[in-house]
Image (cartoon, rainbow, N blue to C red; front, side, top):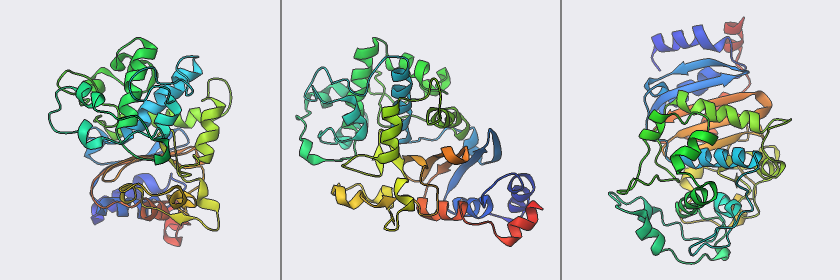
Length: 331
């Protein structure tokens, strides 16, 4: 971060934020950042970068957006996490199993996201029955099956369902979505969104994890607080920091830990950051695309970019005790 940008940053932002945003922002800038947005206690306290308005691919953050839609649909008495898949090789697997990526399906990411795929139906037709012994396996198949079931359950196209249940799904956002040659949307990845376009969905996470009428179902909130037996760091499309307070917590670089799929014990004491609050939830996309939500702090951090980005490094800087210099700046 150059001196002029650093000076401007401290002038407009650091005085309003409760964490050491400056050192985290410097780390982010050094790792190919395209946007950094910090929303705290109901307002933006820092915004920077072209992807505040430009729309890069957000990769697997798309999974979390579909999860948010399922939760909101469930609140209105619609789709249930306990709903079984009604057709195909995954018949009988629940939507919750798909969202936890514990359905036992082969991940099939390469098949679904091969360049120029004309028809996703060809990939579905080659899908093998699930093997539940696989445990947690990260991949596209769970989510593409989920998309088919959403269409069947709602009786509407995915575009209409997303517009109804996921905040921020304007027509221009949906128009950018990646599709196969038949025009069918991809579910596991495929969206292009700016940091500001992601903010409404992140704010829904804050609201959904809160208390009172209209919040997400208790079963959802409980699972997001505990993880699954197969992966204590993951549930329903979100990465969790729940083990951060454990004396045995071990920081795991998620992006570098998914292939080959590790055993459940690998995740058992895993966390994203020992420095960050344990209730932090993360939407994670390849190459440093992140949305962090911390309900206890009423905090959202959207970071879009590329490069060798580390959650542990960024969050350690963000949640470090403020330096004397920063304290002096805040007056």
